[in-house]
Structure formats: C-alpha cells, structure tokens
Image (cartoon, rainbow, N blue to C red):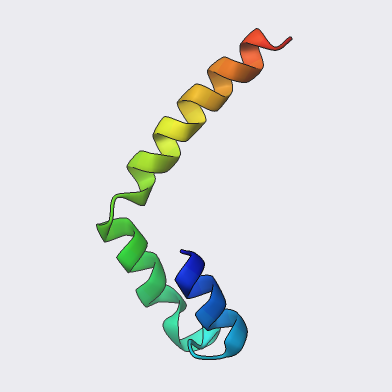
Length: 50
C-alpha cells in the first residue's frame, strides 16, 4: 500500500486508470481479512477504554 501511495502521488499510477486494479490487488492479498481482524480488536479495545 505504501508503494502504491507513492506511485499515485508521483503520477506513476493514474488514479482514474489504475484504481480498480489497485483495489483488486488488495483484495487478492486478503486485505478484507486484515481489516476485519483489525476492526475486531479495535472495537474490543475501545469497549474496554470507556
């Protein structure tokens, strides 16, 4: 993700042209599982912080 961010900022990747491919690559790498796991533990942390 960091590499793609730099590429979008520097113009090596075009947001209009390359965004869907970027999202597909993240999906194929299992990003949704990472997000779900992170969200689960963040929710538990914030529930205990109150």
